[in-house]
Length: 141
Image 1: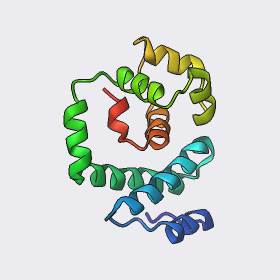
Image 2 (image 1 turned 90 degrees about the vertical axis):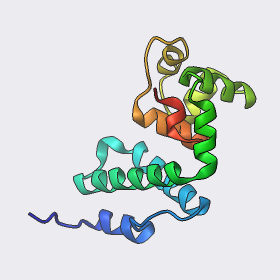
Image 3 (image 1 turned 120 degrees about the vertical axis):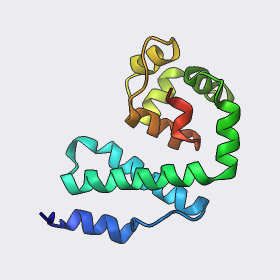
């Protein structure tokens, strides 16, 4: 059964077609669209949610095939995700409250993550990846 293509979905396809990413500019543009969609994740129509899923897969494929990203991830493989976030926060002189406000999440969730009491949702990990311009894998076990 074919899904009806809503105007919102058609706008997404015109803005950023679902094609392989070829360079950092494509990657950055895709991450911008992903972040915007994640910000309204609770209100996405089914076809918009499907678009988001496919776009995330295209980003993951690009990141998996980027030699610089692979090298960084190889070095970071032994660093726990919470330590990675702590390091990035220190480098950017960011407070827990400031970062939580900036990415639109609960300060308690970040605090629990940093103390090892819980993991991050994929949505929050994606926002952190966009904020710090790193792979989402840095924040996931």
